[in-house]
Length: 112
Length: 116
Image 1: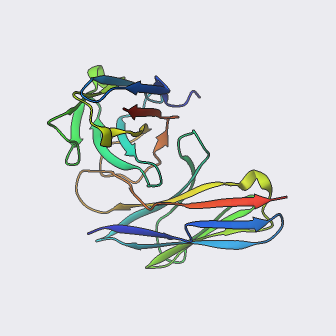
Image 2 (image 1 turned 90 degrees about the vertical axis):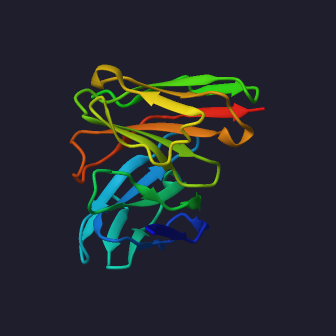
């Protein structure tokens, strides 16, 4: 069964304190791994798609990496506005569905 | 470019009542999705449409949930009758390409349903 596990469940950082969020996955065949950001009361906002092991993508203070079993979202020198829930999802290869299988997310709080 | 629109944003109903949610996807997007997000969990797919046809409804509780996408654009999701466990945020998403492709799903703001 395809599955996504995120850790930690919650993370509190001081402004400027870099850290990483983990997303472990098992999938029959990976079509893509997605990172989303979700603010309270809003829908998920797309951040990155990774397709194959070794791939990396960056956007401002965020950098996503992918291996065959997990993905990391590295946050460099975070600011309070980076506070949100970060969701990881996988899309499996094969079949007609494009469904995303989500983890439960990591709630990040960045204190000034 | 306008994003995915959903209404209402909030709904409170009694159990056994019915409720309907509306979604307008990004213009030109072929694929539309409805996800259910229970508090503290990640979204879970309920149904996927390609144009106005159903691609995947394997996780839709068909005894109480129904959905349609008329003319391949707007979509409605209905629950009848509602149960307490249906309390959740219902998210609509759309993506530009057809099934079988890896492309980005863009989400709307969601409808928060509370069943009392």
